Length: 472
Image (cartoon, rainbow, N blue to C red; front, side, top):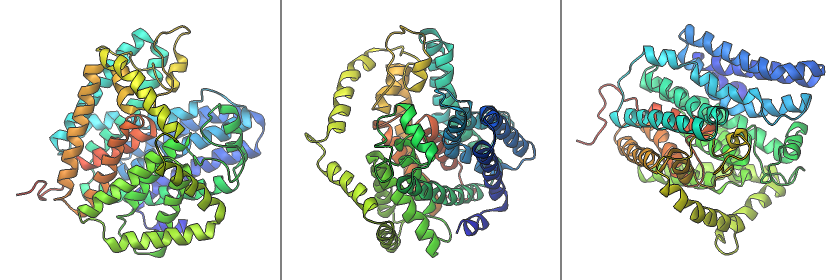
């Protein structure tokens, strides 16, 4: 099936995926079969190899291949990090995780060289994000130190740079959309299949990651009891990213083929096994939007449901029980839902402080980057359960709210246009709407969330020449 998927890709995009697969295979085999010294050197070597490949593709103007390679790096590098740690010992900070952001940042010179026609609202959102994130970096350098601020900035500007590349790349909009959708088919297959294998078998490097990382939300480190996180760091990014890929795959030109239904069904099972309600909401909301806009045929949803039911029957009782248990607790959300109550209590506690702080605490005051702040740094919160308040907390109430308002305005216009443009546009816009709304749960501007969101917005910002973008 994988050979069929790759064969259906445009040749240039397929080259990018092939290069990513070769790089991952060489690194993984070298680490797992070679001496300890190879595992120690593998992290920096993987990063340098990925950057060299990206630069080679850009200098040869292989734009589709670069995009495929860059997206692949965001999807697979956390897994390579775990394999490196498995061979060389756990490291709280790993150079491998810089691969995705830096592969995006190296495209900035080509962004500067090229200009394409783009919708003004999308351009305004990109410009606002650059200005606000830049401000947050400067404040972070003053309050949390340059190391913590730079760590957070890389995970914001890396995805943003990749989105800017998509917005400026000299690729026809139709070809750009087709390339992204077809890349998503392969991505959904890889993430979905690996997630199911992880649940049923739990590879040794993933087991050790659960044990040594200190993350307490991944369930028990034994097969059939783990909360699936696939090749990504945790279940949240895995679930939401896979949901986006499944939605993009829905519009593949060969959706009626049996393997296409199988890919989407496997991806949806992976989303279910992540137990991430935000991902379920994203998936369900996007499907409803596409149905309302008459871009998704009801018969296709029915066919997907049948394929999903068959897949669940094949995978067995353990998979069905895991998903069903989470669904039952979701339906009972309220006084009996501990995580829901904790999220509400935290947001009620942090909201007054965040809204009252006009200047913000700066980048590096939240998330993993906060661990790099100097000891004793005040107002550092490592775990946020709200992307809305995290952005207000770090960027300041005025800049943060400005970014959120521009995002909401831009997303609403993107979806409005999608209803009057070619059908493929709606399958780009719907998951972008879902990711933007999921700022309620997590910071979808950053990391792999941000890579998905900014790439989608970059594609959505490219109009088709000669096609009406607004109703008459």
